[in-house]
Amino acid sequence: MDGMDKATLVINAGSSSFKFSVFQAFQGGLASTVQGQIQGIGTTPSFEARDSDGAVVGREDWADSNTGRVALFDFLVRWLENRLGGVRLVAAGHRIVHGGARFRGPALIDPAVVVELEGLIPLAPLHQPHAVAAIKALSLADPALPQVACFDTAFHQSQPWRSQAFGIPHALSEEGIRRYGFHGLSYAYIASRLPEIDPGLAQAKVIAAHLGNGASLCAMEGGRSIDGSTGFSTIEGLMMGTRSGSIDPGVLIHLMRNKGMSLDAVETMLFRESGLLGVSGISNDMRLLLGSADPRAARAVELYCHTIVKWTGALASSMGGIDAFVFTAGIGEHAAPVRARVCAMLGWLGVRLDEAANDRGERWISAPDSRIPVLVLPTDEERMIAIDTLKTVEGRR
Ligand code: AMP
Image (tube, rainbow, N blue to C red):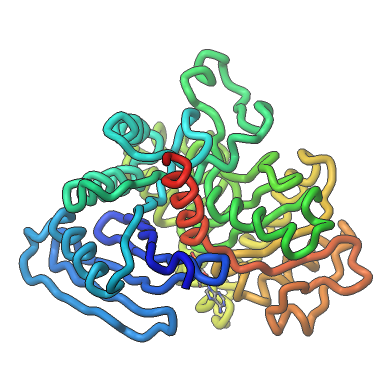
């Protein structure tokens, strides 16, 4: 029971909802004991929590649309205190999309950090404001609870400048127009798992593919990010669920200059109407597309896999080789046909798939004669945030 008397709250805030999970020390590691979400913020909020077996352990509905974030966090903290019995919440960790050039790791939140996070809102206008709103609300609901910001960008700060730079005028680069990279919490978690799984992978050149609704690749060597497919915004790189991935900027100039599209319309097209959804015209849900007989669904899946393979070539080249390939996140962990297709297209690299192992979703899915091993590793961004949060508050003492 060592350490079970302390709990860490992890918050992932969205526009009208936030997800939470609670981690407690258990058998030398951390165990997620409660998770859930509050949704419908601004309309009719509702709360649901589940235990580690997935059983619903709490539910609440609010009819009043004026029930704001402070009241909802106040409810959550009280509910958790009650649920956790003698266990104390020692810190809350937030997933923050953008840490700019300044944040190279998790940061203990104080008023100055909040100001810096607000200053980064223009770099991630669709995500950052909600995280900042959650931090402010939680500090009003529970002023004594230490809060930590954990950044999706921080893991990529180790990249050499040439991976981070665009070929644009120097003055713009100096202003922060550069590649930052995202999904860093997922990659940090994968990097932390590799040496435990196989010490031979600790120093290896690994390309990890985070294939969820958002999707990207990260080239890492010795557990550090060397290059990646995501750049200044969360658009660059792979085609995603509803995001286009890399697109010739000339298209955007054309659409705005000659087709009368507004800036907002272009943004909506790139972030919400493209990717698997836009190409298929059906859905951004990979499960649905794989099950569909519609040729548009097949084309969307084909283009999705094509961009993964194209970027793998680019990143392997940038890193000067590749020793292993890792699939993770919703599609990477569960969509065997996508993995099979990507592996077949990476045949030129000497990748050979063990089809039965892939169909069963095993950890090692490459055949014994594959030149490089291919793995499926479940990611756990919440756990990474809990680990970083605990380290940060403990380091403060
Ligand atoms: P994430 O953002 O990591 O939760 O991943 C979401 C994506 O994973 C969606 O496109 C889902 O359709 C996809 N996904 C989840 N489970 C499966 C599955 N069993 N087969 C295919 N795709 C899946």
